[in-house]
Amino acid sequence: MPSLHPELQAESRQSHLPGQLQLLLRERGKMGGSFWLVAGALAMILGTVLPQENVCRAPDGKDGYPGVPGLDGRPGQKGDIGAPGLPGRRTGIKGAKGDAGEPGLPGNAGGQGYRGPNGLPGPAGEPGQPGTKGQVGNIREQSRPAFSASRKSPLSRGNTVIFDNVITDQDRNYNAQTGRFTCTAPGFYYFAFQVISNGNLCLSLVKGGTKVVSFCDDNSRSLLQVNSGGSVLSLAAQDQVWVESDPRNGNRVFDGAEADSVFSGFMLFPQRE
Image 1 (cartoon, rainbow, N blue to C red):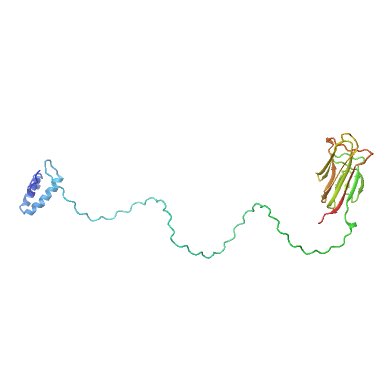
Image 2 (tube, one colour):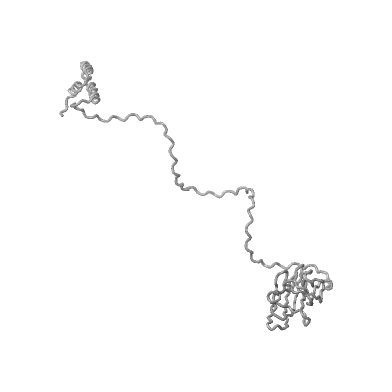
């Protein structure tokens, strides 16, 4: 469509305006040509507000200058906590070690631990100074227990072999009724027995209920023979020693007058204090 003269365009737009507005514009047009420029601009604006069909539309004007920046808005709400940042790099130089502080208060004692393994023995120490020489002793004043007993007509007392006939009892430490020797002077003692049997026989030397040594003889021909044994024992005060057998296993001790069975013992030397 061919473009019209600005004045003609203004009249064309005025023909579409309301009657009162057209009359006002004509009256104002008599005042000068400059007014028509203003009226033309106003008509263009109203033409865009009141679009009509079959009306030519002028091209869009250029963008205006940016307006003045507005005021700052209100502060927004606090955001979520962000992820922790990476550790920073140490760029400083390590300083010198400071002075030691005051010692703190002692802590509570800990529980006692388990005992560790024994260590290796240490080197031998130097010999000590000789002690004061003791007084001369009298061997006659020292205790020398010794006894010997045989079997005549003993009573049965379980497995203990009773030697009821006392031959020697120096300090009266042997009991002929129980067949037991009771130690009153600690030391090393030697005990021995010779027991006659006419069958299989096993005998044990017993100390405080514990069998120390045992001796056995096999007598399948039922002949009289001797079962003998002996041992050195270390005794403390009130230790008891006796000879023991077990008749339930077929052990048989001969009690005839043809031969004697004997149980003996004596101190070798006392124990050092």
